[in-house]
Length: 86
Image (cartoon, rainbow, N blue to C red):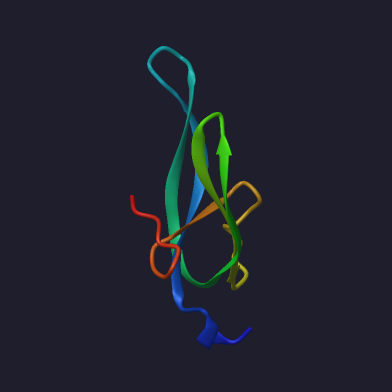
């Protein structure tokens, strides 16, 4: 992997389950480590369903191997073309 392609910053988010005061399970996403990655758009389209317009984008994220990224994790892009404001 060429380090020059890792230009975008992403944050690894993992889900945790806790209980609220009434005993119901509550799932929350917690930020973990931030790392450099290559974020590239693969496809995008707009869908109209039930009178609402929705945009769908498929992106590919390449990063170096990390133990804290699992199939249950999600990545939040904080720099680059697919920046997600929070």
